[in-house]
Each structure stands twice: as structure tokens, then as C-alpha cells.
Length: 213
Length: 187
Image (cartoon, rainbow over all chains, first blue to last red; front, top):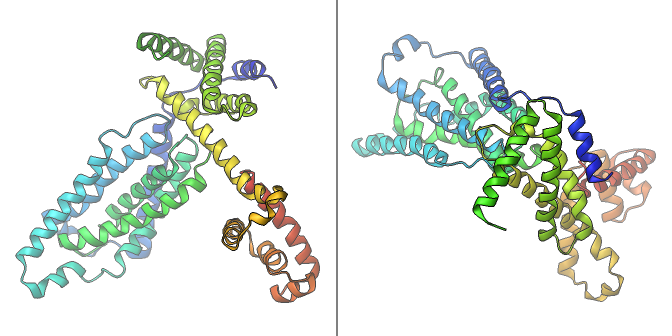
């Protein structure tokens, strides 16, 4: 087929395009994905029994705020990476900021504690299961975000896959925080972050395979 | 070429016709695609001087991609980087496909270089195929592995894989077709 004929064929068959495709797909992906993660958490893990008292502690909100800040930055990263030629701009800084804040808090807590308390602050009661439970809860948003990206046009599949994984991990962590009894910054700075990085790494590996177009 | 005001005028004109086209004006969209085709041809021709036969195919592939992905273009975004990112993506995709194909075919085609082969190179080439092979389902992967790489007969391979002889033959056939598809970037 000659290129002119192709151009004519495309132009004559083209339908009008509704704006906002990216927003619509991500709204669906996040809406259903978050609902799925909440259901998994409630059915498989259950919210912490003292949730009503916990919401009065500032640390509870920090525990929720850390992944939510990361989720917002990861969402911006994912939507930008889903469309050709959109620069990331200040997104990398927005991703690093919450991590640096929680690390500084963790360092402050650890330095202020007696040496024999430090390991307990770091490991808490649940360090062995926390990252893998977060990774498990990340699956619904992960699937949704990859679906959203496959209907768009990511030109940097490793970065796009990583952003999808991080977004899923951050939402999962916020959901997991409603179950998790841990309240110490060193724990969150280590195991919550590790839990989020597991789907991020999976996304980096899956991106080039699943996001070709 | 490279003149900022000229480039700015092209950007403005093409952006206008794309947006009109996306809201349903077929003749504006036609004008957009026609001008885009000419720009893409120039862009790829400069970058594929050693592959002139590929230029027009790539122009068409990229036009199709622009068309299929036009829902990812949003009015407030500049057009040039959007088109450039798509063109670059398709160019890299083509080069990667060719590199994969050449890597697997060249050692077989170049008969005269048979003496240039050393142990190290053979090991490298074999590893490449193994990487692709590893992605096949077991009932295709095992027969190929046993017969092509380990040199077993159908009967021996069937025994080693715990499969019937006809299953081994079918597995090799389908597996090699699937491998070819992978090499051609079709899966």
C-alpha cells in the first residue's frame, strides 16, 4: 500500500476522539484496584482490632501519609510515562521526598533509643511478613495500572512498568496500614519501603514484555 | 532547517489540524497525516542511510501508531515531542528487531567464516537461543532441547521427557515455529 493511500484510508475512517482517555483509564484502574486491595485486606488479614483508638495517634496518620504521598507522586509518574513525549519534570524529587522524610524520622528514633532497643524498633513484630503481604495486596492495582498503560502509549517501558509497580505498592501499603499494628518509623522506613519496592522491581521486569505497542 | 520560527510555525499548523481532526474534521486530519508523513520520511531517511529500503515501511508503521495512539495526545501538550517520541520508539523497535534477527542468522549464513568460529563464540550464540527457548512451554522446550541441543533421537528424547514420540515431534515443530515468531518480534 502506498503511503498516500494509507493516509487517505486513515483519514476517511477516523472517528472523533474524546479527550481525557488517560484520566478515564487511570480512574478506573485505581478505583477498582483500590477496592480489590481493600477487599483482600478485609477478607484475608482483617483491619487491626484497635483501629478506632489508633486513628487518634499522630503516628497512625504518618504511617498512612507516607505511602499516600508516594502513591500521588507515582500516579503522576505513571500518567506522564503513559503518553509519548511528556517529561517527568519534578516527579523524581516528589518520589524521593517522602522517603527522605521517613528515613530522617527513623534515624532520629534509632539514635534516641538505647542500643539494646534498636533492633526491636527496626524489626517490630511483623517484619518477616510485612513486605510480602504488601506485595500481595498490590496485585489488584498493579493489574489495573498495567491495563491502563496497555491502552495508552508508554515509550519507556522499564520506567513505565516501575511506576505502575510503585503506584500499586504505595496504594497497597496505605491499605495494609489499616491492618498493620506497627507504629515505629524505623519499621516503616524499612519494611513498608521494601514492600513497595517488590512490585516496583516486578514492574521494571514486566514493562518491556507487557507494554509493547 | 532548525530555524526556531519555522519549526514553531510547523508545530502550530500541524497541532491545529490534528486537534481539528480529532474533533471530527476529516480533511484537516488528512492534511495533518500527509504533512506528518513527509516529516517522518525525512526524519527516518537521515537516520537510516544504511537501510533505505526500510524507510517507507517505517513511515507507514509510525503513521499507524500515531493514528492508533492519538487518544494519548492532549490539547495542552506541544505536538513536536509527542510525535518525536513515537517516531523514536518505532525506530528503536525496528533496529532491535533487526539486531535480534541478524544475531541469530548471520553465523549460519556466513559460510566462508566457518574457520573464524571459536569456542567462546559458539557458547555465546547458544546462550542466545537458550534464552528464547526458555520462554517456550515445557512440552515444546524439552523436545527441542533434547534433540537439537543434546543430539538425542526422537525415541531417546521421548524417553527423557516422558512424552510419546508423536508428542515430541509435534512439540519440536510447534516450538520451532514459536521460536521463529519470537525472533521476528511477532509475539
